[in-house]
Length: 85
Image (cartoon, rainbow, N blue to C red; front, side, top):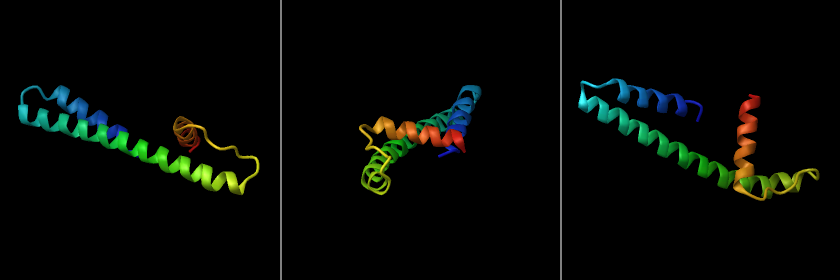
């Protein structure tokens, strides 16, 4: 997932800078849209599985952990742990 954002940026810049070749411009924009869709799908899967694992496993194992109320909390936890690494 860490290589997804540079891929999106590269595809967008190639499409923007490639003014003379319409086929290459179209291909780079298709790659950009595919990267965006895959990024959103990965976030949805992460939040669904993350909430299930957090509420089903972590809360049962550790007494100090509280259940997650929303999927946004799980995505926030993912961003927080990504910043720590």
